[in-house]
Image 1: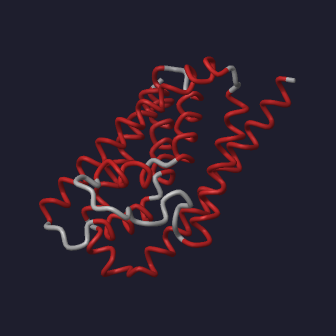
Image 2: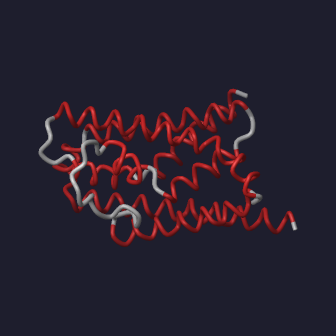
Length: 207
């Protein structure tokens, strides 16, 4: 049970961290908070991560309920979510940005922590589908606990990166951050392929 917990925790932390596309989030955070005082940036990071966590927890447990309500199978959803995640990966690899969150909001917002930073920059359509798939795959209590803790850990790592965003920009520059986003996209494409192939194999086996 403990081994299952730790293996699930480590794999979930890595999965969720790449699903969040941390270096793209850092780039968007720098653009959205340019010129703001450090205290306000800290507050935005905290509220954005809490919002992303709450959204992630809801999606984590909503998968099975949604599948049964709509009348679709997990394998079918795997294929759809994997294809959407693959499109996001392609966007990251080609341009270093997510295809659903490429620009800044046109109007001034009182609070950018929830929209657009938490949603859709951190948790976009492809991330939503992937979280629902991963949540539905975990059945045992130890696996669910490891998955939730993995989500928390990935958001904590992202929060640290956001706090260090100024230093990352100085060290890596815009080009370096763009390259890191593209590397994240490459890993996401492999994750998307695995989700789709698992869905296809499961669908064939069930028929």
